[in-house]
Length: 104
Image 1 (tube, rainbow, N blue to C red):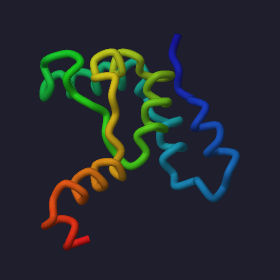
Image 2: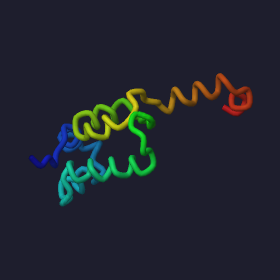
Image 3: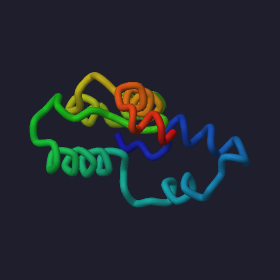
């Protein structure tokens, strides 16, 4: 089954303030979620060849994980179960480094 529209796309389409054109571009794309999932996983494996070593990290890591669990479970299966949010990383770095604490 080919899936082109995720729940996030439906929410974006129903909220004009979230429309950047990205959702429409995705909907018009010839690529299926399965194609994209395989490409993303191949890219990750290129840089992180050992399973369960790479972590998901970023500003919206929890939303990203929710999307990946639903739409790209193969990617989630490859990554470590832990996630790193940008906020937690900055907090850890600034509390463990006097130099970084002084610059923030």
